[in-house]
Image 1 (spheres, one colour):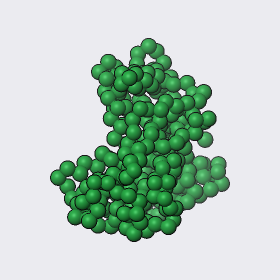
Image 2: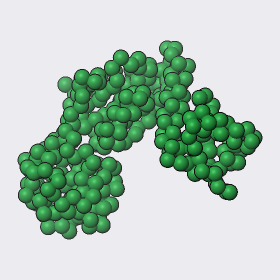
Image 3: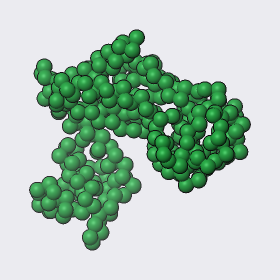
Length: 294
């Protein structure tokens, strides 16, 4: 299985057409069709359903696409890092991050580094801890910025001195919007919209005082921008971190928990993995940012 063939496969999956993919790849259609057929024969699996005007992925094809994307991405990253192993600091730094306002501190470090090294680029991917650490384990990220507890035996880590505050995002015309803070019993009978990882080391379930399964959960989210739209439409009350949504001049309001609940955040990276020079600079910059606060 050659990297070139994986790129052929991904081009066809993206274009949903062998002819368009062949044109994009600058190869003939028969050559591309033969490469795809050889790939299917190699695995003994049908990856595409070939229609008259388009092709679609089978279930095996969908699974293989995810793996092919990971392999190609890792190969490209490795190639770029090997070409930049000299003294010049340039290249891409990939960070998986939970949604947090404190990403601004990482952005500040990167901005300062980019003023010194114009070839340094930052790539941020948002998601929940399970999704992010899976990609970190596969070598697709340099770092993850995780909220709540982390596996300190599995990763090298740097606990950051920043804390985000939990609360509830709601419509301004809600009766609860008049309160300065909310107690658990205030939302027991309310339709709730929860993060997919609300009970993953975040302390939300402990604050609630009862299992999430006993509450009226009407929806879950992994990106709070979507949850804020649901709240604005009156679907329910969003349990969220503060300052992720700018509520100034909007129909939404954030009300914090009582007693106050704040969540820690930690920068983690794989043990025994050699960092690129760009990633090393970022880590050094984050450490300097922390020391500058002391």
